[in-house]
Image (cartoon, rainbow, N blue to C red; front, side, top):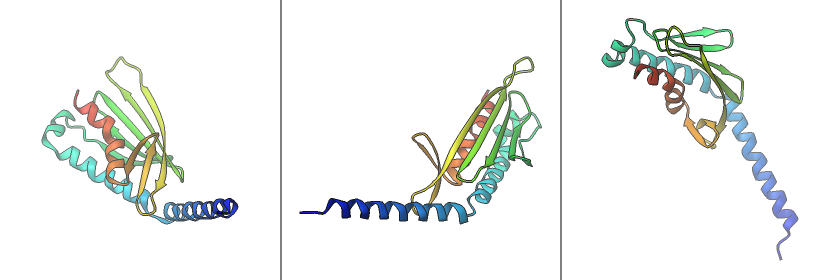
Length: 150
């Protein structure tokens, strides 16, 4: 007969060790720098891609450091501002869009949770997972790409 108390204690110890490993990986990784570098690289590619370059009306997308993180800005209409803020175990993504000169900004705020599977880091939004940095950059920049398609 199995001692269920020992089984539960063992499960708890394994879960605790896994959480500690995940916390260590998140706290001591360079995921934020990697994500910012990926975003900057992707923005440069967007700005130089002929179809998107034409849609930008000679106003390239910019990435700049702001007080609360980084802002990625597409200034030509429809304009999009994405501000990303590293809050430790979450990244706040605030997106503001304006369709035309008479519209008001529409805003959306998401808190993407930084998680680890023991090896790679990813951002989690409900049931969606975005591997850092590639998939996360694509997700963060998707409102800008959608605005370029209009």
